[in-house]
Every structure is written in structure tokens, then in C-alpha cells.
Length: 291
Image (cartoon, rainbow, N blue to C red; front, side):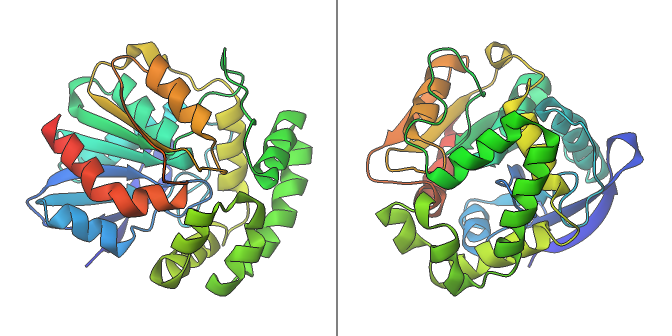
């Protein structure tokens, strides 16, 4: 059973935090995708519990019940994660980030020193404008348009997200294949069904319940300066990415595997964006424990 509580983050902001799994388990600090409310998907929690792991997740500022942090950078998550860990009495922990959460897991790995035991980025985004990377090549049109809006500036981005957010908030699980059509490869289309589709729809709806500001700030920080050096990562990191991914193209995973200091690459031909974490999460956790 997951429990939800409010914790005071950096600057006195409220953060909505969720905890699930064995009380005495080693902790996985989980960073949700963009947009997401930090709700943990039960089968992934079960994968952790089977390995004696407890999951802690939170809604990034501006999502769900977490207060907005206007102008935040990716690196700012380290202070919020520290506040959460301190409040929960957590010393060392593993960290995992999915999609837009990937850079936040890497920030913790770079900035929190020995407190982070190991990290994993699953289908994570590479820095915008990274040398040697065509950032939008192979990306679905919806995300190309979103990146262009973010690059164009705050007014354009807000207008874009409010249009898209209205559709997503109103989408049922059955509607998601239409709402996300240009982003779904075949394996992801098959994954987005049943309980996972219900979770995806509910998480997106809760994330945007108070407006698009969490999504807005995520997008601006992802296309801006992340505020930390990927070469400063000094803990074991694994980069997981699927070749079929249209949300975040495969080249992002290849770039991160090459440019994150000491990273181990798990680049899989048969997976997309959504299918990756759903299918290999147990392997991700085994890799963290082995590291």
C-alpha cells in the first residue's frame, strides 16, 4: 500500500511525496516523467518489494499537490530530494528517472555525492543542443512541436501546453491512443492498455489538476541549462533506452551513454518508450543492487 504525505522542500515549498514498499527496505528515489504526478505504478512497486526495496516518489514542483518553483533548473531537484530524504530518515538511496525524470536522477547522481548509491536513466532526455546530437531527429511530431514551443519562449509554450493539456486532462485510458498517436511505436501502442493505460491517464490528470505549470517548468528547464556537469557523476549509472522510442529518440540514450561519466549502456533494440520501464524494471533494480 502506498502512502502520500506533504513534506516541506527547499524554500519552504510543499512537496507531495508517495512512499510504498517495505518499511525497512533500501530506498529507490523515483523521478516521474513529464508530465507526471509522481504516483507509483503498483507493478513496479511490487518488483521493488520482491527485492526488499522501498520506493519513494514525489510530484515535482507545480504538479499535483506540490507548490510551484518558478524558474527552476534540473539541478534544483537535488535540494528537494535532500529535504525528502532527511524528513523520511533516509541516508543512502538509489535513484531512477524515467523520460523527463531521467535528467533529475542524473542531477542527484552528480550533486548528492555518496548519498546516492547508484542511478539509472530510463528513456531519459539528453541536454537540448548537446554537441553531436540532433535532438529532434526520429522524434514524434507532438514532441517536436512541444520542443519548438519551449524554444520559442514562455508565451508560446504556455499557449501550446494549455491546448494540449486540455485534451490530455479529458482523455480516458481508451482515448490515449488517439491523443498520443504520433508518439506511439507498435510496442508502445501494445503496452498502453489495461491497468497501465488507466495509470497513465490518472497520473496525467492529477499532474495537471492545478494547471500546466509543472509541465511548463519541466519543459523550460529541459531545454535550458541543467545546472550541473554530467562529467561530475561519480557513482554507478546505467542508461536504458529502446531503439523504437518516438517520445525520446534512441540517439538520446546513445549520447548519454557516451557522455555521462562512467555510464553503462543498456540499449535495447526491441523496446520503445513506454514498454521499456514496464518490461525491464526488475532488471533495472537488479542492476542498481549489483552496482
